[in-house]
Image (cartoon, rainbow, N blue to C red):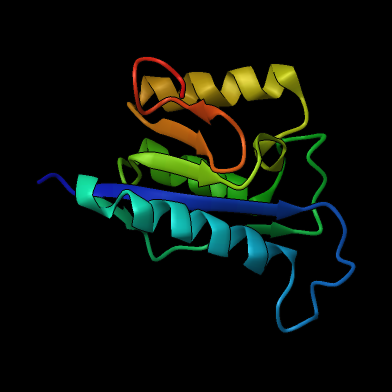
Length: 125
């Protein structure tokens, strides 16, 4: 069985509450990890790197963890990007199209665990 390397990307626009021991980024990560675990039989595994942008707006794509994720995608380290909601990746439709284009170019699929958005199959489910 092929190992499918799954990167979890989390984002929260304000830093409010990030100092708490369990915060929004943790909740997003847990939901994504649970989804990936449900796909273990397909070979899905979480990569060790955390791509967490706490305190960054989704209105632009100049975010350190997103840049790191894109660098790892270009380096072939990621097979699937998993997010809690599509707007965690970006709130801009134009930026979303650019990001998905880069994913496609590198054979990377995209899944939103709380919305009907999944590019791992030929039809989004």
